[in-house]
Image (cartoon, rainbow, N blue to C red; front, side, top):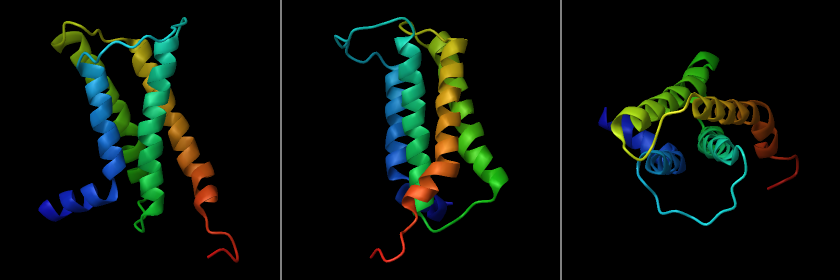
Amino acid sequence: MKRKLLRLLRTYPLTLLCAVLVWYLCLLKPPSLRITHFAGSDKVAHVLMYLGLCGTLWWEYLRGSRRLPVVRRVVCFVCLPVLMSGLIELLQEYATRHRSGDWYDLAANTLGILMAAALGRWVMPRLMKPRDGAK
């Protein structure tokens, strides 16, 4: 168990850092920023936050040497992040006074996760593939 945890920390350090940052931004009350808001700007932030988290997860996975079966990738790279997002929304609604859970936030998070999955499956492998003659 300890060996698996150490391998996880070595293989996905940036993803774990991003996950901690997502939990912080979603549950604690971060300092307010003077940013111009527009209708739906928070949904754009949710999409980008989960696109960044899961994009980092895919990048670290693809640069590693181990390959997972398709079903396990779907569970680890789509289902678990969606469940994490849902848990955060529930905690925002029922465990904080300064946040509220929102089904549209969950939908925006899921969109970011699915966008990262598409990029991780079809785009990133081509970009990371060594070119012929490159050293």
